[in-house]
Amino acid sequence: MKKKFVRLISAVLSAAMTLTAVPLSAFAEGETHTHDGESNVITTPLDFREKKADENGVGWSWDYDTKTLTLDEVNIQATTDSMSVVTVPDGTEIVLNGNNTIVQTDTGDSYTYILSAVNTNDVNCDGTMTISGEGVLNAENRSTDSMARSLGGSIIINGGTVNATGKVVAESLEIHNDGALNAEASAVSNDGAAVGVKRGITVDGNGSLTAVGGAVENEYANNGAILLNSNFGDKISVSGNGSITVPEGNAAKVGIYYDGNKSIDAEISGGKVTAYGTKCGIYKVNLAVQAQFTLPAVHTVSVKLYRQ
Image (cartoon, rainbow, N blue to C red; front, top):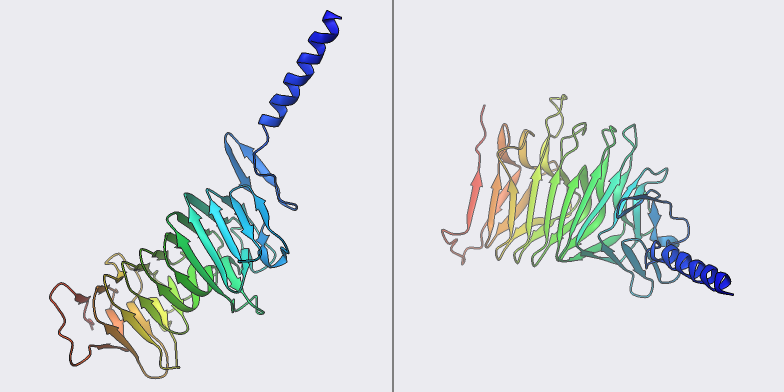
């Protein structure tokens, strides 16, 4: 009897130890994980357009009704045959908690995004996503494809910090409150752009945009750290304590480059804009100030002038 009791206790303890080894949030269906010490790495892409109910995974949770994706210390290291490592539907809000990492690990030719918002068009990323929270997202594309990207869609950053390696391709870009986007062009980029925007850029509140471009071999390329090509009357708008910075370390020819038909206006009513390039700071950008507005000394525009 005593031996049976001891065996029973041993079985209970063994089961308890097994349960404690399983994370509190169950693995979502279709996820593959590797266990390294105390970290769980997701090694398969995630497409939240396919999820039809609330769901949780390691480091993430999805609220289907509100289209809210919360990232909490997530670590995704994946390759993908589709257009993006993580895809969210149009209108998604992404909340950042802690330090989050998403990496496209394929170092070969891979014309992909790290994180994209899609309505109907996967390639052009025609959806809108809003990023908020107080955490950090590190998005890195390791592809050697000259068209490798990091973020795609119409992007609104209301909070948190996004560090992106690989071109950010946005229909429009807005950064508000304490949101921050730090973008760096990939080493093999065909245009050396860290940020490419089809429409306009708005930075206000304490928001900040920093872009570091890369040099390209093609001397005729539209080589700028921030590249805009709107033909719809859009503009660059900086106000409050917002800032746009292309630092001296930028290797692209131009800091802020407009390659549309005419030129684009930049309305600066506050904050700071700094633009450096190996040849010029800005190209085809009209710096505009309303006539009734006096630009205070604290609100400055620093531009490296064109050199022949």
